[in-house]
Amino acid sequence: MVKITDVARHAGVSPSTVSYTLSGKRPISEETRRRVHASIRALGYRPHAGVRAPADGRPNVLALVLPLRAGVHVPVAMEFAAAVVTAAETYDHDVLLLTREDGEAGLRRVADSALVDALLVTDVRPNDPRLPLLRTLDLPAVLIGFPADDAELTCVDLDFRAAGEACVDHLAALGHRVVALVGSPPEVYVRRTAYAQRVVQGFTAAADRHGLASAVHPCEATPVAARATAERLLREQPALTGVVVHNEAVLNPLLIAFEQLGLRVPDDLSVTALCPTALAESARVPLTSVALPTTEISTRAVALLMRKLAGEPVPATTLLPPELTVRASTARRRSST
Image (tube, rainbow, N blue to C red; front, side):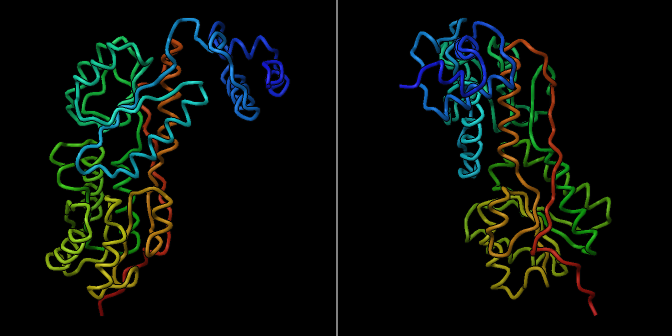
């Protein structure tokens, strides 16, 4: 049986430091905390309940509010959930996943239950009805996403407006003059989800700045809708040569539809995307993309929560800059001769 002294020896600290890391009875540096937890996992140490109970009686549980609303791409949502769980584990915290769409009532129920120490809230809207409650709760909270008014809130996310701009800037640099955005499902825009709106704002602003003809097309997350959208694009924008896609579910169906309609990517049509890197790399044609950094966003959000729980000051806003990676789906526009 692995003992606390074994963990201490493996981590290069004293047994009391291991005990304090688990109990929270004394402050431990972040670097030491991570080393101790790495040794615990490596050795398979299982502390008894008295050792791991926090001194202040907190449950050591974070609530991840991740409503699986219509139009949410579940695989990406689960990437966020897995990354939050992994990050929370390094701080010896568990995660309670809340997927129901019950808004303020759900937050109030969790806050009153004493089951969790803090809240991570996703799928933020510009005028999110949950914000007034979040500003008054005793529980620390971090939003993954930015509302219109972020006063008294702690928010972290990818800079989606800059991401939309980066895709258009890339297409404009390759000489494309007519571009389109294939966006999220219509219901995502109807409920005014902040990240989707910011992509549209960035796309439109960059197209106007470069003097490009542009259009925005929401798209249902189905192959049938992808085919219909591709046909509409070519019908309404016959000179189209550049497309930005912000809808993970239709990436491959769109590429197939363009191919069936006689367009070669990237010879006839350059395609960029906002999506996880693995999805861009495995697409039918490897896609030039702005990565959706689910792990970095989740890790930063959890770290901010831990600092708030410790009473430390944190930045109000954390915007991650977009990183565009060029792959096989974009090329210089061919001259129309």
